[in-house]
Length: 260
Image (cartoon, rainbow, N blue to C red):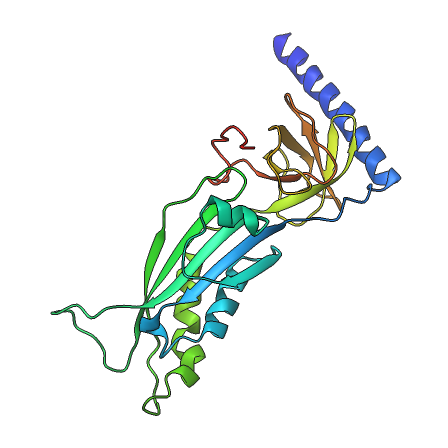
């Protein structure tokens, strides 16, 4: 009898959640307030040691592509953002990306037809202050069959695009960040700006203004519609415009107390 009773409870919970999500879809989402923060702020730079072969324009494009579908603001800066600069840029995440020329090490064999570089990535959650350890990757430029002496910068795409993109792909990926666009009872509808799945746990990232807010937890109950439906599972109260993300994101968990 106990397994049957547990099954009955599960069916009742699912049946209660489904009408809430359906009702929200029929009513249509309430427009979310205009955002005053962007999910990702990029601080990118090309070191003088690589200035002869990697162009700032190419590096900026590659790093912006790496940030994925997140809206971005890009600043030309060599330093990883501290808390003050992260907040002043009004970002949810900050990505510091630097491209350097690899120094020559005595005794290390090198192909004279290649250039060698280093990619440094640091990702910070501007809301919680959590920063991932710097990711450093060595990259080998593709050899050029023909090359004019002193014209490496003109060949930057052929030299670096493939290897630099591969190095960025090995770095810390930014998790999907999405916004709540409607709420009915304990069910929230979330825009499909990220890839979410049924039963996935979502945590609050920030409020509509990109500021810290009281934590809450949602569980996705329907990830297959035009909007994602998620149910509140504990204390806290979500609001329209709040940013949420998968709780598996190491930049969100463990959640520290919001700073004011």
